[in-house]
Image (tube, rainbow, N blue to C red; front, top):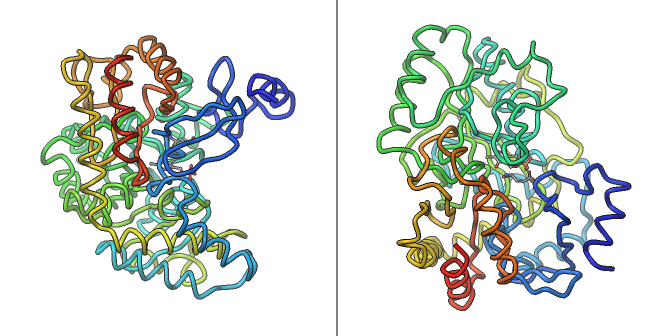
Length: 413
Ligand SMILES: Cc1ncc(COP(=O)(O)O)c(C=O)c1O
Ligand SMILES: N[C@H](C=O)CCC(=O)O
């Protein structure tokens, strides 16, 4: 069956025909039968170069042989025990070694669960009710953070979700990114009710939008001054900007960190970790409850361990990814819009200047983006289908694919 036919059936049985809104490409999404290295094959027999990488997790590409072997090995021993397994200690120790700010870590099954638990923990630890998030930041699909949210919420023009009680989100304060004055004045006025600031250090869900020089340092010092916990949501940037994520890249030590995506090697995972005095509040060690049937499942842990082992054996991959992304950027120079990149995260904005924040990102010409995106797909390059979702490449993208992507950018912009 062709993608258009499958989508017609899907819409009858799945709301909007998809399991996550960002996938609902119109008039119909393409359905994929296999992914290998940097490429996807669709039911319509198209062979696409993938610059979405499943929205970030697949830094080693699709069906990487080493990860596949590790998963198969674990499958033969069972995939869910409902008991602790040695693998969770292995992965916890690795995460702790890779992030000096993380002294203890708890595994969950998604990035959303990780941020939800981290925020509850911050409230439990400080005894304060409110949180601050950055406008356009996306931290998953749970109530407290579905306010001015990026990703699919912004793409669909629904940054605030129906079904989220106003009474609840009044405890979520919003500030613009790259604006230290807004943060400072909010904290000077109200810090006694604020438990934490949660932020993507690099805005990845309307971006990437990069922090201006000194911004993250100032965020760290102002939050510390007011005893407000700083939570870095590194679900995208963790193991993407380097082994120690954005916190290593920018040299900042948050109080808590959330991870996901790459950490599970492409299988569902999330994690939150940080200072021992804070993490010790989590049940059963402390009074902040958090639990999950699939938390720390051996399959995701195994894929994660294999991925991190591979990354540790090939640390030069980060420099290679950066050079490849730069080649794509160079192909776009002189084209009028703005190309933003950090490591292997990148985006071409249909806006003259790189945006500094959510308001500026929303000024981008989404109609032009849409037409560009369609041309790229015809050229067999799959970009995330939104001006606001970050593009990624993987170590599996060879010079051949980078050349094809660059040529397509040149031709299609
Ligand atoms: C920065 C960030 N935090 C949290 C999440 C939620 O993660 P998940 O989709 O695994 O629930 C995402 C992506 O969806 C994300 O990009
Ligand atoms: N931007 C989201 C995650 O980073 C995209 C994933 C999704 O919502 O399905």
